[in-house]
Amino acid sequence: MDEKTPAADRWVSVEEVAAHLGVARDTVYRWIDRHALPAHRVGRLWKCKLGEVDDWVRRGGAAGDH
Image 1 (tube, helix red, strand yellow):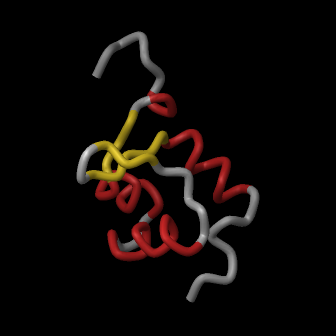
Image 2 (cartoon, helix red, strand yellow):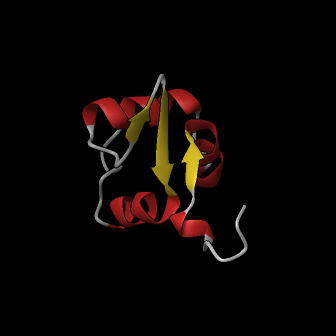
């Protein structure tokens, strides 16, 4: 990681998002598909910025998903 890049601005994998939020990887994919979790497709992979994910959670983006 570039030492000048804050962690919230790094592009991370679905696995890292899942670990950051303490949820299953499949849950992250479901949130991307159904709940507009901020993610961007890079080739075959989904990448997210942790700062955007944290903002999404604070706005209630993950609320009501069971």
